[in-house]
Picture 1 (tube, helix red, strand yellow):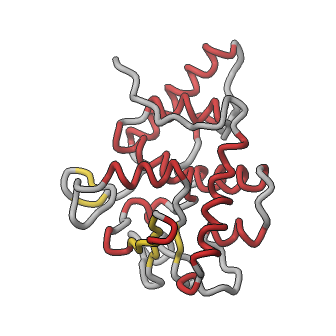
Picture 2 (cartoon, one colour; picture 1 turned 60 degrees about the vertical axis):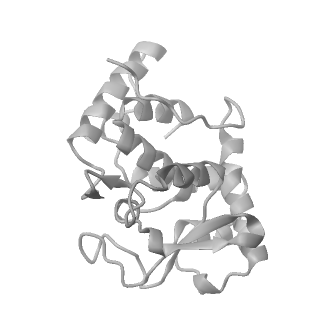
Length: 210
């Protein structure tokens, strides 16, 4: 997904999905990792003035296949955009980072998501005077993770760091990262903004008014 496609799609999403989608495309979290993200998984890193999330190895999401892969703990590193989202979510729920109607989201890939991507494809065509990419009308929530990975690669982030940021098994023990190593990963995660040809800052979009 390009930055232009992201801007159009996210502007069509309801506010709660927009926030979660922006978090996912900046962290590479899986759908259920975002839906069920808990505050008690947050670990403060005072020396860096930030925090990370450590998702337990036994987290299964809605089913065994939708939770943490590889049976490892999943480190979630926050770049500038992701950190701003986390800060905005504080105080909304004692348990869930992204609550909806007082509880955790069941899934992001719902009717609102599917309708938004159809509207987005139509808007893209109107703005560019040609049809959108064939996959745009059927873009999946999981594609946000792929987009994060592709942007990391385009920014020159090493394969080892990409694996760590995407939660892929690479032989390391995530809970044993030093402060310096976490700082390095945060810098790498922040490099995705360099792949945006429109400018260095990704603005959190407001939902279009009907």
